Image (cartoon, rainbow, N blue to C red; front, top):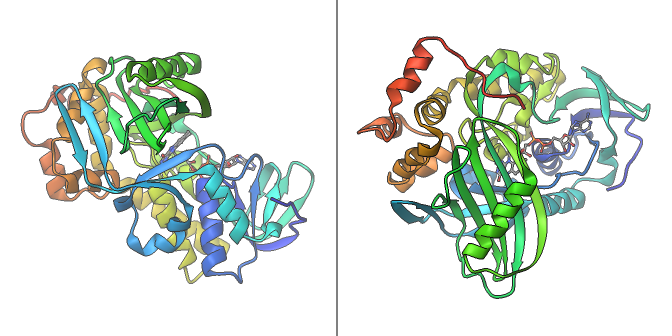
Length: 393
Ligand SMILES: Cc1cc2nc3c(=O)[nH]c(=O)nc-3n(C[C@H](O)[C@H](O)[C@H](O)COP(=O)(O)OP(=O)(O)OC[C@H]3O[C@@H](n4cnc5c(N)ncnc54)[C@H](O)[C@@H]3O)c2cc1C
């Protein structure tokens, strides 16, 4: 993507990752009169496969999402020691490559600025190369804020695409294969069949610790493939992540940790699912809201994104309580039982959970019955006011 002298624009978006890129795309498609720039210090879109359920996003956002989808499947599987199941819920993936291609094709080249942002305030963005952007409004989408303000567990993983000598035989994504040995908390393998002989394999842990041993997990991916009888002839994309699983914390402090005078989006705005750490559904929703906003002035965008993020945090206390159960009640090696039980519930409930749209009756249903782990311990720790910090990003 070409670089240009940014000069004066209506809107500067800081960070060309998922959230910043989606806002730029949405505005370009729906509000082409807005002169905008996206400032990215590395590669637009980064190195990800972002997956989501079709039901995570409103159908009315199809105009934004559909062109980005690189892979889609009509259903997915889960497998636990005592229970396996296929759920008829469409699942889709966006790759960074596709994301960058679509943005490059739709957004004018002059709107991409390749540089590191060193300082930003309302009206002015300073770049490491000395350039200055005068911007009517600034949205900060530069990734996570200060996670030490939150009480967290971690979802950490290494994923790799394997090319197999023979067809691997997997026809649907396996969102959780928890039949593997339970190590370092709740462990499962995640599979995306990208082609007859190409499969993305991710070794994942719901762990108390954020540290990630990439060589070890890469070796476990190879061992898993061998166990499935796949002969790997080559490997491709290697990606890793350490995503926050939120137990509690001070959201106002999280917001303030990256300043109070800019509009924010994505992880920077704390817009991610407390249990999965996934931010794609929120990023799509917020990009659509911004593209439809009457007022794109700086103060209006600050208010819009602030209120949106605080409302999302307030509405997701249930998921943080469940995370408390997962991390504080269950012995690490017993955590899988919480998910095993969850996946016995109705498909509609499961999908609403992933979309962070659980109804009251879903919440009652999830908590009803004999819990698979001693939840008294988890809520005891909440009631006693103990707020152990599990780590920092
Ligand atoms: C490997 C991986 C896989 C994931 N998979 C999924 C998934 O399947 N589904 C899902 O919903 N979520 C997923 N997530 C979680 C989350 O959705 C992603 O982390 C997502 O990319 C976050 O979006 P974002 O825009 O907030 O941050 P990012 O996408 O990280 O974008 C931030 C951008 O800001 C840039 N930047 C930072 N500082 C500066 C600076 N000073 N100047 C200029 N640019 C700067 C960075 O280079 C980066 O490109 C995944 C995360 C990881 C790490």
